[in-house]
Image (cartoon, rainbow, N blue to C red; front, side):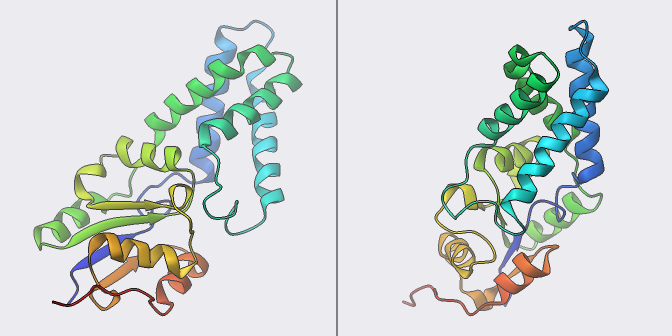
Length: 211
């Protein structure tokens, strides 16, 4: 009997893809340039995107960091904004840039149209709901809070906060343990064949004790 449904977060519940992210970066750059004579918002946006993409490519596909060692998103973003602003001649704006970036992201996060109705229906049927996601804890929890997902979720497991990451089977087992459910009673919904489908389909190593 299906009692528990876990979801991936990005590109499954939250619709914040490359186009939306780039629009967010451009909006931040316009905000910064509005109060900074001589700062070209287009050039700054290009430099930030280039720095961000270079970092992602250097990390390679899949998990960006070893499990349990993912740095806070704010720390990473601050470093990237400082690099981009240094190239544009305004390194002193890095602190203001990361705060504006966090604020703008919070505004721009969106859910897919059918998400809330689906979650409400599942909860109405008495199912336990959770999220299993890779990424920094601060960034992922901000998405959950900003989009109103918190009130629908019984648990959230984020790789940046634990010692494992998708597609490793351990993060799915950890979620099952926290829910007090067995794999036979649960399913995982996600967009990635590599991390969600392959990871979630692996043989479970944990089951609740009977009695």
